[in-house]
Amino acid sequence: MTENFEFKLIATDGKARRGEITMPRGTVRTPAFMPVGTAGTVKAMYMDQVAELGADIILGNTYHLMLRPSAERIAKLGGLHDFARWPGPILTDSGGFQVMSLAQLRKLDEKGVTFRSHIDGRAHEMSPERSIEIQGLLDSDIQMQLDECVALPATPKDIQRAMELSLRWAERCKTAFGTQPGKAMFGIVQGGDVPDLRIRSAQALKAMDLKGYAVGGLAVGEPQEVMLDMLDVTCPELPEEKPRYLMGVGTPDDILKSVARGIDMFDCVMPTRAGRHGLAFTRRGKVNLRNARHADDPRPLDEESSCPAARDYSRAYLHHLVKSGEALGGMLLTWNNLAYYQQHMQGIRNAIEAKRFDAFSAETQAAWAEGDIKPYA
Image 1 (cartoon, rainbow, N blue to C red):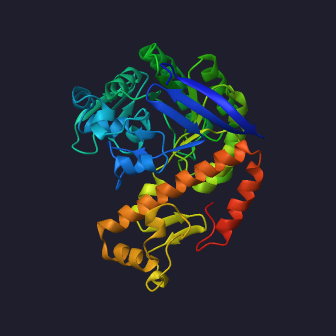
Image 2 (cartoon, rainbow, N blue to C red; image 1 turned 90 degrees about the horizontal axis):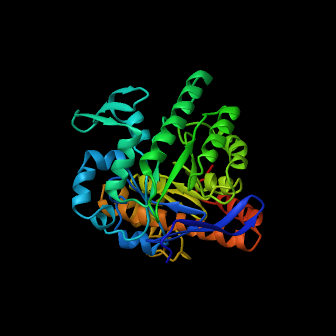
């Protein structure tokens, strides 16, 4: 295992990329989906299960962990890996998105953001330097710059102001991060739905020579075509030899279409949140287990799946669990969903290596269209 942070491309098929990120704590096969471990836990899952499903890396949330139990407490207890019993790589976000969306009484200026916790109302400050400090206390392997994420729609003036502020904060985060062998700090491309601003942001971040680059601000309710248009203008501006991460995205269809544009890494709460609300993802489309038509259905979600939650439990039983509010329902459906997402990523990786990514995409979308509920888009 390397002592450094390294990324290498193994194969390409069109713009789709098959690669590997190697770090002291492990190798991440890309394209990769990172299960979201918001508060030091992937909800409704044991970490052993998450690893067995094929996840190489998980995401931790700086905002939630700084508020409870605190980054300082986690550091005293040996860091987030030991605390959560996840020995592999961890990416932490900067906390900026949650500050903007969850915190109360926010005040943003050049220095950073002051806000009150959504939990107890206590006042906190989040500067670029403090964000990197918290992520260092958590001992994460990939750390994200602090940025301002503007919800769309927004005016071009507001989008430009936030993009330029995020670039200045990226410089400060880079300085605060310094040199940390085996770890990386990623910059975040902003610019909303304005192509010229996205290009300017990507070019400025590229000039900073960071270890990786994320595309932010595209999981905030905009139509899929807007997201894809922004990837079309952004990805060509990013260095080919560095990993590219699309933050907070998304559906299996979002992932397919983003991989086709050159994205390597994804995260989203969708598979875990959907599972807790009775929605299953399968290779034949989505299945809403709240629907009464499943009450007498003896079929499993997918008789060919390697995941016991998909293969060994009837839809009738899963429907019963969901309608009864039993915790096991959310656990089984989350297990199924994360298994499907990792199977989806493995299929993508295999297809890129075999130079048949377009065919795989067409076959996958055709299978979804024949499913219980269509489509994923």
